[in-house]
Image 1 (cartoon, rainbow, N blue to C red):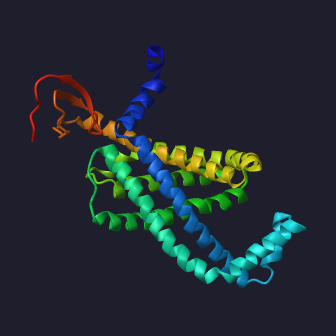
Image 2: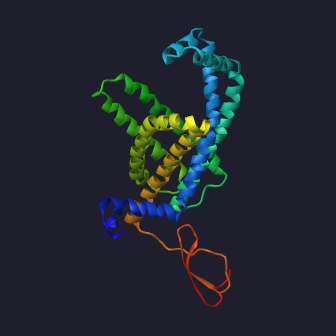
Length: 300
């Protein structure tokens, strides 16, 4: 174990991992993943509404979709039924979907804000968090759409010409992470402080995109044959969990670099009084990590 700790990669990553554990980053990342998963359902309703409006305005839409997918027989009939159902429910799906997507998006923003503030060990903004979350959600949505729009463009370009598009995608991811860290974290530091974690998060997100586009569909296909729709759920949850972990680790990296440059301070915390136990130390999450038996500790 000591030999592993001497490796440069381990020396760089291990402190970040230990800090994430000290502030309870695991459960915080799980809350982000759960909020993201729940927001997918209203997003599906919005997608159904968009499909319904597009198909209603184009009489050849159904046949074009079936031809492009190469479907025939029963599969083609099922696609036709889905598109017809989307046309009939497009108005209701659009209203319910947009309302649900707004509510779910604010839930994701709240989970992210809680995790980022915990990483920096600061408190939230209270009732103003909803307004801040709405502003972040709007900006993040525009950046995310811009990032997704690069995918079709990448497919149309020849190999050597695709490199600028990949770099543009990384740049958009960096801006997305910086936007998230600056807006949602209740800490007054220059935006450049958030840049190292944003770069690491952007690279990690691109890797997760590759995993999501290559591995996840195969995992879904193989697991769905055994477990039905549960395979899809497990694959999506796994991808969201990794993405949420990435966000927390990127934020912890920024905190450690900031502490390295500016130092730390020690503060007193209040803990429950337990008769016969004297607290001697506490973790960054506020839990007593060391205590001694002795006389009664002072009460407040």
